[in-house]
Image 1 (cartoon, helix red, strand yellow):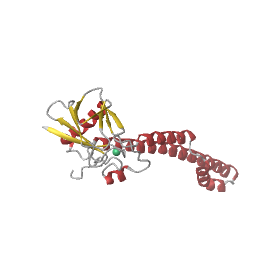
Image 2 (image 1 turned 180 degrees about the vertical axis):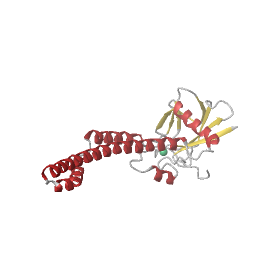
Image 3 (image 1 turned 135 degrees about the horizontal axis):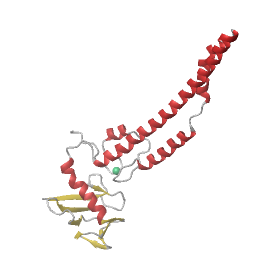
Image 4 (image 1 turned 30 degrees about the vertical axis):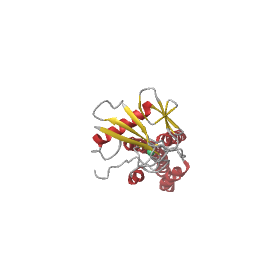
Length: 227
Ligand SMILES: [Zn+2]
């Protein structure tokens, strides 16, 4: 069975290439999904700026390992196209899953980051609470000794929770943990992106991305609403 995969600038294509020089419907790739999908035939769809194989403008040709394909000004390697084709070939088989593989990767990146940061913040909070608790206990103990020994110091003992609270304000977050959070955030912002087109999502939550259902840049469908 033949499968036609279109390439172009328009979001409706299976492979979207973001360049003003690429035609809306630029070319199509034809694969035999029952046979060897490495055998790709490429047809130019009367694109304005042409389809090229190893520098030669083509109408119809087969492409193989090592070939360089250019859609207008955008050159890609055969291997890249093959990977895209494989993704697409799989769509029929994996359509039973709610999320695209691409989206699952994005989701994993987000969830791991949130988990890491929460752990770090929790560790810092525990440390602060421990310091607060210890200090107020020391103050309470001093107050208790003063009270028992000299019948003074009741006030010191009563003040001990205040000391704890005050320390809570004074104790700075652990700079090492803060730096760790900063570093991890930086790496996260670098990796939190569409694995297909590279669009970065900044601090947009995964819930919001899921609600959008598709990549705002390349248009890949992330969520199969029917499942
Ligand atoms: Zn994308």
